[in-house]
Image 1 (cartoon, rainbow, N blue to C red):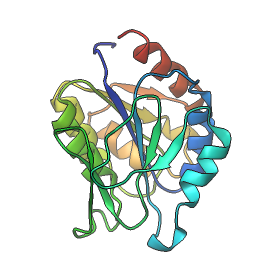
Image 2 (image 1 turned 180 degrees about the horizontal axis):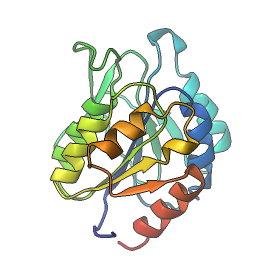
Image 3 (image 1 turned 90 degrees about the horizontal axis):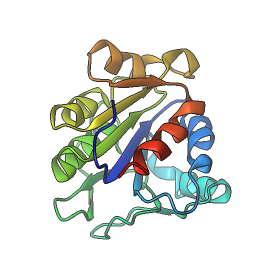
Image 4 (image 1 turned 60 degrees about the vertical axis):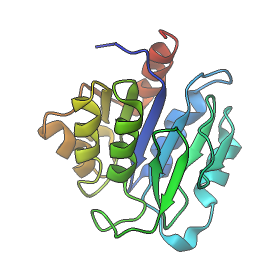
Length: 192
């Protein structure tokens, strides 16, 4: 299913996430038009390590999302460790120290639900490897509002619980291996 036009991509991952992000994000070339927002389950003491590691291997610029900053197309925004990342209706970021969701902060569901509301049906949600059920409710919100939902093929995941939970809940439009996700995003971003 392709629809759209799509205005943003949100991604979430946990256990094994760095490897799968490195398999997807470097394949997005300079000129990819959509903002990409990533939440990975990281502890508050890791600093900006994830953004730094991704910045070294991606063609798109990678930066830690800052409170009240606007989203930029053609860039990768990473949730800062220890904070929930939300997208406001004016398409700026908000950071929150609210209670953990699914025992984590930042939580994928928090980003996905806020992004679904901000973008309505113009959002692509991608749920990757992870060992809990974070992201399932968020993908359900994206799908309910007319967005496009993708889950990593559980057979390719370091931890299959997260993508499998969303697939079993019936909230996933496409199940793809990491090697296919970037091409799918490119095809859909360029069909705008």
